[in-house]
Structure formats: structure tokens, C-alpha cells
Image 1 (cartoon, rainbow, N blue to C red):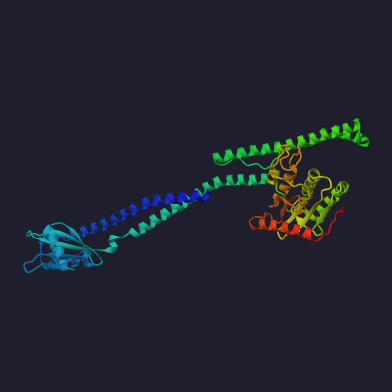
Image 2 (image 1 turned 120 degrees about the vertical axis):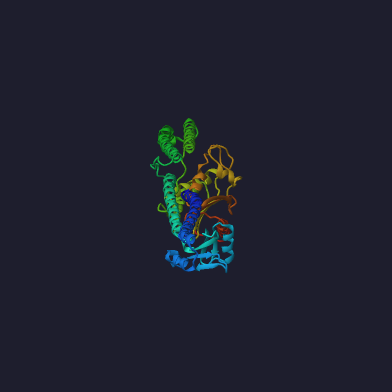
Amino acid sequence: MRWALVKVCLAVTAMVVIAFAVPLGIVIRELASDRAFSDAERQAATIGPTLSITTDRAELTRAVLSTEPGGQGHLAVHVPDAEGPLDIGTRRATRQDVETVRADGRASVAEVAGGFALLQPTALGSGEIAVVEVYVPEGEVSNGVATAWLMLAGVGLALIVGSVAVADRLGVRMVRPAQRLAGAAQDLGEGKLSTRVPEEGPTELRSAAVAFNSMADQVVQLLANERELAADLSHRLRTPLTVLRLNAASLGEGPAAEQTRAAVQQLEHEVDAIIRAAREQRPQTQGLSAEAGCDASEVIRERMGFWSALAEDEGRETRVAGADREARIPVARPELAAALDALLGNVFRHTPVGTAFAVDVHHSGDAVIVLVSDAGPGIADPQAALARGGSGSDGAGGSVGSTGLGLDIVRRVAESTGGDLRIGRSVLGGTEIRIWIGLRGSGPEGGRRGHGRRVGRRIGWRRRREPRSTTGPLH
């Protein structure tokens, strides 16, 4: 915007300067020419009284030489004579030009070598016509024109520079508020909720600043509402948890067991309701900084150790591959742990008891790929599973009442690093969730996306053909 305004102002000022400077320069040149020929006419008139008195050659020669142009060789007198025209002084005009002026009786200007010749007819005492020739050099005709042109050019250049400077200041006044607005939007997106924009500048930008500040206040209010809803969770869960704790020892058939199951069901309904309410008012997820990183292999080993006890109870075979070496990723430890818990929890929730599952870690130059696969029935519609919200439907292999937050949590963790989340068919026969975690803030675009798919297939092929190290128990 700033440079566009400068260019427009430069073009307009240049056109105005040209429109005024060129005609003014032409007028100055005409004035200089008129001044030079007016002086020549006055010089020609100085010899007129002598011609009216005498036509003697000697007298006329003395009179011509006594004048300033005559002494410089710029004045000549052409007197008609019975023996032929008499030329006194230096003649530069042609004989034909002289005779034409004598015949017409009107002054004329003839172009000669090095300048111009003013031919002025003068009546003699005898009634004949003599012609006085005054030589006007080219320098006198254009005297002062170059200086005037230089002055006009300087004034025009000063006007152009001044207009550009003014336009630049105006552009800065318009651009700076826009830059502040863009910077504030970026800061707000990074989680700096106290960011506000000064309401200054042009009217349109002031309106935009007011709207931005109002939006920021609404974001803060929405986050406050979310925190209140989260804080209210403990109050909603207190009663069913108390009932569950009191009846945990008396599980089995009978009223106590039914009461416990009812309390658990109530607890699940409350949790689902709170999650949906928080999801509706959730602000956009902030990016994760590279400084808040963790060792993905360590987190995977820890979470698999946690879930292995339940897997052993349900007779599930577990396997971990590639987690024996460090894999630093730009994801906070709690975020990665939550993502893994969501995926592993889905395995236990949506696959039959005894279904095997595995977690593989692949190390690439610019990414870490985590594959979570199982031998369950798979997901019929992966796209619907990724797009699923709190619909409570079983549209993607989940159960009724699912909030759909599990895959969404994993997807946001991957996308915060420039990566992505994909669902496919695993070599175990069930679902394979591939998490691409970028290490340099750039996702697997272009050829790297295809590379990620080939890597996943190679890992699965090795998993089928050769045994690999495991950290979980084998059943």
C-alpha cells in the first residue's frame, strides 16, 4: 500500500510538472528570441538618420563603424546605386533576400551561417529604399534559455521529491496501523491473550482495531468460560465417584453392582456433556514451540508400560519397535502422552478382547513417524473418523456416545509441528494410525508425503518378516 501510494503520487506530480514546465520553457525561448530581434531593430534604427541625409560611401562607412554592432561587424547597409548595389559593412544575407525586402518594403529575418540577419528597409532622401542588415548570432537568440530550462527542471524535481516524501509519510501513517494489526493477530494466535491494538490511524483501520480488540476480549471470555466448565468437572463427578468408591468392594450381582454400574454410567454421561460443551467454546489450538520438546521413545515406553497391565488382563499381545533410541520431537511431553493415551484407549475400547496391537517408531531426517496398529476390525470410513465430532454416532468404527476427541487431539499434536495424521490398513489386519511429527516445522508435503507412506509399508513388511525388539510382554 505504501509503495503504491508513492508511485501514484510520483506519476501525478510528474505529469503536472511536464504539463506546466514544457509550455513555460517554450514561452521563455520565444521571449528570448523576441528580445534579441527587438535589440536588432533598435540597432538598425540608429543608422536611419544618416541614410536620410547622405548616401556618400565614406560618410556611411564612418557612420556604420561608429555604432556598436558596426564595430563588431554585425551591421551592414545596402544602398541602391546606378552602377549596382552598394554594400557598406559585412554582408551575410543573400543578394536575393536583400532585393526581396527592398521590393516588398517590409522587414524580414533571414537565416544565415551562425545566426540570423534582420533586414530592415529604410527610405532615402531620393525616395529609393536602402536595406539595413543587422546580424544576430545564435547565442543571442537563445540567451538565458538553457538557464531557464535548468531552473524549471530543478523546480520540477523538487516538486516530485517533495510529493514523494509527503506520499511516503502518508503511506507510513496508513501502513503502520495495518502492520500493528497483523502483528497483534499473530501474537494472539500464539497465545498472547493480552495483545491489543491501538485504535489509531485512518477511519477504516481504527474500525478494524476496534473489531480486533473486541474479538480478543471475546476470546479471553471464552477461555474463562472453558476454565469454569473444567473446574466444575470435579463437582459434577464428586457424587458418582463417591458411590463408586463405596461400592467398589461389593461388585457382583445384586443392587450394589447395579448401583455402581448406574453411577459409572452417570459419570460417563457427565464427562461427555462437559467435553462437548468445552469443545463448542474451545479457541483455536496454539502451536507448540520447539523448546517444549520431549523424547518420543521415552514417552512411548512409559505409556506402553502403563497400558501393558490392562493388555495382559485382556490377553492382548503388545509390541513396541524402534523405541530403543532417542527421538527428540518439538511436542510437549503431556501433549504426546495424551495423544498416545487417546490412540491406545481407542484400541481397548473399539477392538475385541484379545486383539493384538503394536507401536512402531521410525526415525527420519526431518520427521519422526509413530505407527499405532492393531488386529481389530478396522475403520470403515477413515475420513469420517477424522472429521467426527461429538455426534454420539457410530459412524467411524467407534461406539455410541463417543465424543470424537481422541483422533482430534492426535491430529492437532501432529499439525502443530507441520505434520499430519493418517488412517490406513495395518499389516496386522486392523487399523493403522500414522502420526507424522515434523522436526523442522514443515509437514510432509509433495514427495515427502509419498515417502511417509512408503516408510510405513517398509516398517510393516519388516514387522511381518523378522522379529524385532519388544518392551511389552508377549502373550
